[in-house]
Length: 383
Image 1 (cartoon, rainbow, N blue to C red):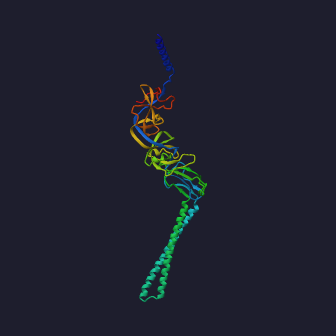
Image 2: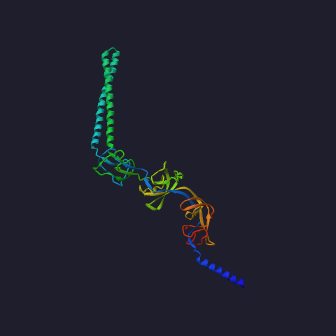
């Protein structure tokens, strides 16, 4: 009877303990899960700070000489062709010098023609006296005079022709001085900014003191993104790699691109990480028509890509290349280690340790997530 009482008491205590555990046990942790599946995984790198959309050609133009603006035939935002006049300084004095130089050429040509005609006549006279002298019909004195006259007039002809060349050089010099007062477009583009108004004076920048250009011209037919990439990521980047470009101005769009240049040096700025400038082209012509120089941009460069490989969401991966595997039978979690491959912010490749269809926890930052924890699914798992 005493043994039976002890058994009853023990059973009661066990039941009480079970009841206490039941009512005090932690509530299941609500989690979200995702299935391990086949898909594409890329290894990418991105810029550390915002990049900038730049025009392939952009020129800050100013006259090479100072003066007063006399003509300003363009406006900001106007498209111009190569060679179009953008700005002209007052240059009436230089135009007069050009006309004077042209007239001087005509004068020198006339003098040269006259001198050379005299030289030809003197040459013929000297030749005729040579023949007469051989026939004993002309004296030595007359022959010497004819020869001297022929030589003198030939020199005068050469001097006159040299004077024509000098006059032409003086014309080129005057025209060059005139050209320096005219600012023309070196390429077709859009006038972005104009610093100056009619009748204002412009002066060249003093040495070592930059001043705003008179005209800022942008070639809008070609754009690229210049972005800083951390020096740690730079060795894997080379020309020709595919890239994706995103712009704050077009938040919902991704522009395909291609690496066009990797800088040959590391940029070391105080209080900033060391970076390498990488340039990425927009590869679709239709995208360039929508761009403006100066847009902020981010680039993601694809270093490697694998198709139809086993992958897991990167947000499910915890320290040590582990995931929390959901056990549907016991509704608990099991910490599972796996071997990763390529990885980016979205997906991590699974080389081994997991199988297609396994469900892993993606809400790993919630309180209570641990190996063996009881959980409940917050949303249905992916099929």
